[in-house]
Image (cartoon, rainbow, N blue to C red; front, side, top):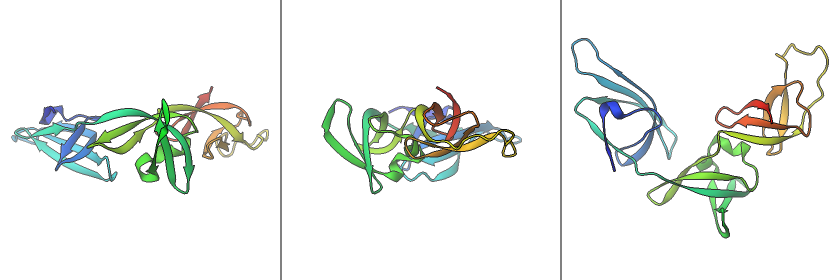
Length: 188
């Protein structure tokens, strides 16, 4: 595993702090008056999701976390447990709790493939694609001149998630969704 200097701790890197994996959300190197430079970071614990702030000084080094990824296929959800399998072997089934999957679970449809983040032989998080295409199941009709709400309406997707979309979106349309923000991007 690689050791990172204080100025190499940058956003999107995963580091080990107290033997726990943290993702760097934000990093800012600055120098206060005549003192040595400091890297002020915002870190998110990959297992608990808790966000903390940490300062790294010039003399400090930190170890980069040894994370691996492997593709897994989403099968179905039952009572808060999500069932997955290996993409090429449906007999290797296992389940994950909703908190491991995160907020992107609202946009996962059956038989979609995602990347599992593995730390110490355990799946700690799920990385689903940033943009997914989903079918609109319910979309109220647009009323001409009804733009007081900004020209958008609530639609329901095939996964059951509800989002805001433009008035021209109808039932049966395929729309592209940003899973990180949970927002409409475009018609696919």
